[in-house]
Length: 285
Length: 154
Image (cartoon, rainbow over all chains, first blue to last red; front, side, top):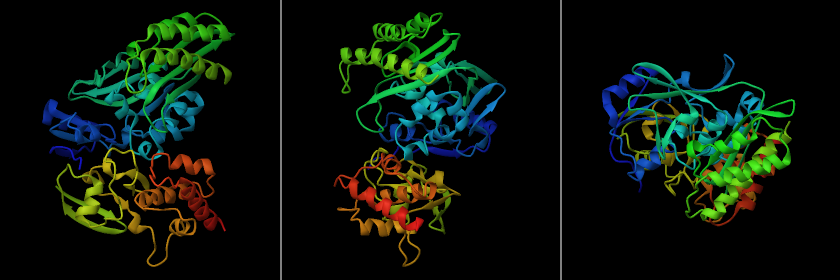
């Protein structure tokens, strides 16, 4: 039987209360929401918090909405909420493309968007998605609220800039005209990615004015194919250039060999997936 | 800590350690062994129960998280002696062999039909994609759910 080691449990009634509890229990306390990343880690003793602060009651952190020119996704929004949000899908199809292939429908009913980001698993899909979207993350702490760019959120595998005592509250994606898509290769339904790529393009009069390309599980710094983005920006979205962007992304990522495949295969996959994501995004215009 | 959970319409007050998982609370504390306990890693789906009407994998939910909430298990599917159409469908279409995955399959099926009264085969297969049947009886499970949906439509 896999059961977590003993811990103390408190249920927060507001964001302020959650911050007070995190301060009270100190750096060995952790926030729990869906628990679908944290509880398995605790069962395996890969995480061993002394206290859990449960934020499931904080309805102010739930839901997906448009507010002040941004799509605002509450950290407590379940994956199923984001997948079911018409406004998210209408503005940024990449969000629905990704959510459709994250775990399975039952896990998506419980797991949260904020929890996935804070877990920072290198094979987790939303890190690359929000990096491609150039989203901002709102983090509440004892000294107030700070905003961090998604591209600066991840320190390393399983490590983010969220400090002990802080709480990720929402993810904000500035609304702008764009096309986007996410494409993933996995071994079976609901599995972690062998590799995946997300693309977000703003195209004005047949010129790409903004390009965001995210890579999942392919060893891209900050989950981004920065060189490919730079190459695409300022030119037309022609087939040749989409293929070349894939080649550039493949050249610059650093995938690691594991049970999901060797380096040369994953590098090939990176190029192919970037091109496919770009084609899919451009084709939807 | 003391928790109060409504399970299949009945209120239960119990003292539990925070680390107790909902699946073990239901089986060991309440004796509701219809909910099965399988992979422990939220992969297999035999432990699916409804939490406030939404199916979740109870091996990855703490019992204390259900404090003040409503849980529905396979024991709460039939109304007295009257089987739920989903249960009837599994009988009519031979939707089980060993039966280990069945409670989870049925709880997800019930939710699917509540949300989509006329699900396509693809809807059904997608809904079940986080649940494993090692007797490889998926064909009949899909038919059983189609049978139940058709019965409720008629």
